[in-house]
Image 1 (spheres, helix red, strand yellow):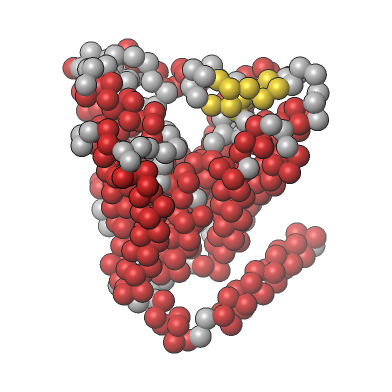
Image 2: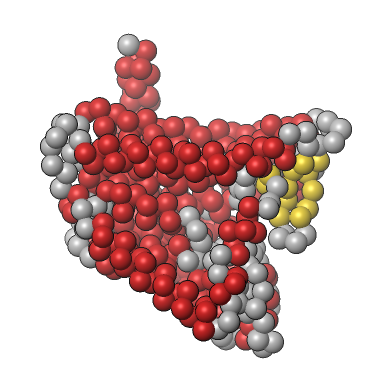
Amino acid sequence: MSTCLEVSAVSLILDRADRRLSRAITPARLAWLHSPRAMVLAFLAVHAVFLLALLPTILTGRVLGDLPLYRTWAENGLVHHLWQGINVEWVYPIGALLPIVLAGLGGPLLFQLLWFLMTMSLNALAVAALIDRGRDARGYRAAWLWLVILFVLSPVALLRLEGLTAPLVIIALVLLARRPVAAAALLTAATWIKVWPAAVMLAVVAVVRRRWLVAATGAAISVGVAGLVWAAGGIRFLTGFITMQSDRALQLEAPVTTPWVWLASAGRPGTVIYQNYAIATREVIGPGTTFAAQVMTPLMFLAVGAVLVLLLVGLRRGSEPTLLLLLGSLSLVGAFIVFNKVGSPQYMLWLVPIVVVGATRAWRQWRAAAYLMLAISVLTTMIFPIFYLQLIDGDPLAVLLLTMRNLLVIVLFGWSVRALVRLLKTSNVGAPAAADSVAAR
């Protein structure tokens, strides 16, 4: 009874939000917003703002965000023939070297511009995929959501590798039903750039009927990558990004770290926020942090295993395959974040593609996740870069913002798992699951 009341209360709040949004947009404006012309103009306007903001940096040949590191790595390889992940151990999968080197081909002065052009191109392809090049009316709301979140998260979306992998995952999820090989190739490529798309790949392999084709495509590409690394003499560093992550302490922004951040803010002796210069990140140490860091990875694997079991049960019960895939993907990615001892602002871009594609499929089913994602994005940008220095100093307001953001991430993860369980309960046991009908639309 209480669960039904909670669902009704949430639905009432979301209905009011939708009604207010509908009243603000007249039918004529809505028709215009759902036109290819409006989408093109909005996309160009958003990226024109991005370009204007980056213009002083581009004209002076400088770089922002994580790009100084990326540019150094590109120069080390192109000029000094010292390649990350081949000659030395690296924190990223070896595929991350490709966009970094591509941005460095024009020389150090053009690095910021080329990175922006790569990001803009992939964002354009993601928007085109969401609206099926203007043919799918249901995709426009999701495309607008994607542009709004891109704008809000622009400090990380424009300046980190997630800005490239997020649109790749959107395109892959849209292509999955019609072109599973292409979708699997994109997800595998994205995984070799940053690990997180592996969660989506796991959900795809668990749910779709042509899982062997998808798995074979991913395996073939991975074998090819390993072969290239072996030929270059760096096979011993191929999995270095895994071992480097396993040795890390609790990172400042990870959800599990939040209690110790409050202790550091309160001046608790022995609890401090410090800079890990080796990997250029902020970490927290205090009573119990070593144990917490040790148990988070096993907990993450347990959570991932539990979600995979739910997906297999859903498949057996004939759950609607598209919803099963998307909820499973969101639950798996959520587990990657909630049970991770590492946490960074760009991790929020792991969640965005799945929520956006879900909104394309059915807005009413996914609006709670969409509104949560918008709130998470706003709080993330307030934390970084606006209040980041204050957060490092333990300012209570900054810590409160981080706490609110992390709580909302946990709520979103809980929403996805709960929705997945409800889907299983309402499925017809023994009904065939037409898993090859999985698509974004």
